[in-house]
Image 1 (cartoon, rainbow, N blue to C red):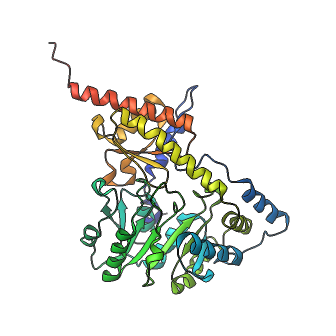
Image 2 (image 1 turned 60 degrees about the horizontal axis):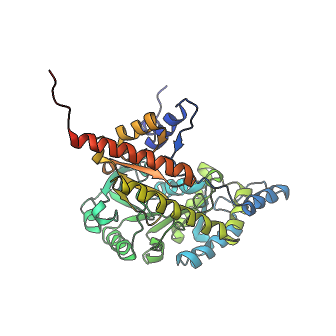
Length: 397
């Protein structure tokens, strides 16, 4: 029996592929895993305790597809206080992680054949989700010279009669760029001019190291922005699968039907734990953010001392490293780093064609292994760059 091309044509994630390779490396010394954005912190105890308490108290039945009212209210308060976004609880839809929120936003806005403008380099899931939702992903380039902040004029040149959605991501994965308000406003003006929906991935909204995060939804006065958030990175809850989407009222009224069609609802104890996470003490969030910043500030000098060009992130928790000077492609460099030096990183082309020559290093691992990993990366780069400058050995025939 034939399977749908929607299923068979979705490519395997380049990040996960390197993770699979890392798991297959045998030997007494463990591979240093710097390829995944999975925090090494455990979920704060008061959040886990809230989930356990919810189970003990019998809160184990179905929830509404739009989400538990208490959580929706708490998130509306959070969006107002921390993001400057004025939304009613009814405009918040609870999802099975930020990934489902992104996918549902695309399902709600696309008809088959519609084009989706996606960042390049950008999270690989954007392209696969757009295709699975019936859309055609069209990459727009994020230029290092612009600090990986999109240029609205360059994006406008890609808009066609089939373009329906502009997908943006700040703080950015893999680059760590945090978009200033003026750049966001220019993109929203473009969306207004060309009648586009804007899907804004803001899952790293609380992980910034200087310039504060500006939500696209806070600048939206035309009801065309859907902003996606997650508990995964903020509260080290990646395995809990809890996210949310804030949208204009008409869209928010429709989205729960798509939740119902895919997962029925998010687990009730998880949602009640989310209430505690967003409404309770935020000390752990500040501690994790400080740790990621300290790891960044430790790793960047190690790389620069070896002559490795690296973009210093203003948000998220990744280093975007230019390894083209090694004379190797990003895939070859990442492969050699893994096979010869037992360090796993994500090759840049996993994030799009504009990622060629780069690798992404996750700061979501402990400082000790991280230092060892970037030191080995720097050593491979320096040795390869030196050999490249020296040229081939003289012919001895």
